Figure 1 (tube, rainbow, N blue to C red):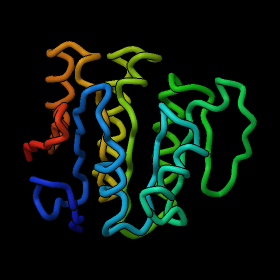
Figure 2 (figure 1 turned 120 degrees about the vertical axis):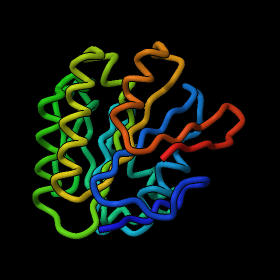
Figure 3 (figure 1 turned 30 degrees about the vertical axis):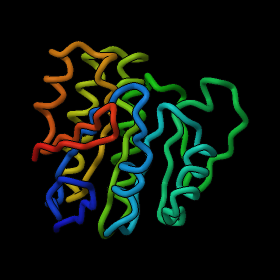
Length: 192
């Protein structure tokens, strides 16, 4: 199954199983790319949020006119920070951003329990690595990419370039089928 990408300078479509790495400066405005990725050609999508709460993700989806009815949100922050939370059919929680097993398990449950065209957005790898370490995070990303392949889904994974060494960034690049570079000036270059 093919998926429309709708991202500047990228292929019109990519096959199911494709993982895309979004490299960006720490201050980069990634919301537009992320929401464009989620808007098109999608039956259901999972947002794995390591930087913002489920409420903030919902606000972002509303602001960018993304169909929130199609969203499932995995909030990795609220429990750890002691915020009040209520699980629902479309909002799930893990204890903290370093609960990589829980994140992989929730991703697998989402992909196994929904049909049609499925997308996953993970914002961000950088936060996972901060909490759980680079090696464990890389293993978790490999596991999620394998799940995308198994379930014919696609994913977009954020990584802040200046936080990681060039070698680490290159190691992540090697895991993905496509790479989007968001430059400081807002321009995009891609490699698929």
